[in-house]
Image (cartoon, rainbow, N blue to C red; front, side):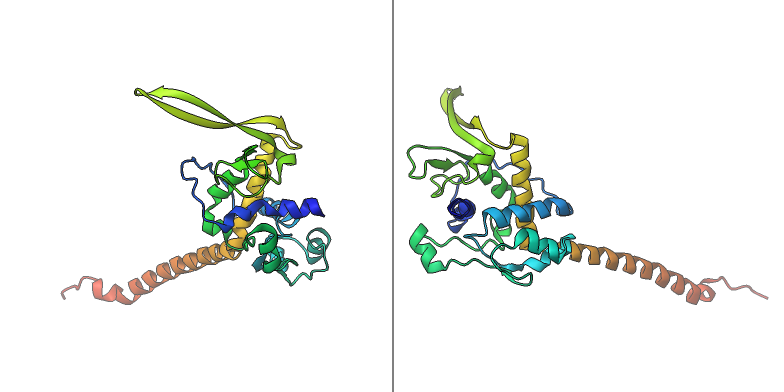
Length: 248
């Protein structure tokens, strides 16, 4: 239980809008139409994030839009007596979280719209060991982050390597992360997990987006058909007017 509670701190940095603008963001390359990826991301979110971070704008039964049945949601995503129609809330109160962590972990309903999917994807892959930090961890995307790398067992342990190179007569520091000890997942598998979670967070921020796109396509097709019918009707009404007159 303690382990899952700590794992839920993954997105605590979203509470502060820290910079880290000197890092090149990796492309998340998520696919909003990949429902299997979003389903996997929902599982990761519930297991690793939802103990501390709520998603008050999202209901569990909204996942039926992704092809999950209510029975699948109950069996795989509900662990503490929640109901399928409930919002994704947490038991801990903000006051208690403020006391425990110094700041209440934010609601993640629209974190992808706030931070951006590329930032979230980069953040999840940029933790490294830092013995100068209380937690023993730091992050390139969020310097001096106040939380540990809760997925280190999956990703493994990274360390920061710095190289000094001369460019135009001046020294330039290049920093890169090196995998020192592998985790349970291979680098490609961990990147896929991170991408699935980001895909779900993006979906959660705007779950009706795919439906609106489908409706928009249908409306455009209908208007196109109506345009053709209107043109044919206009041609029929005006054919006598445009027909050249013949003299007798």
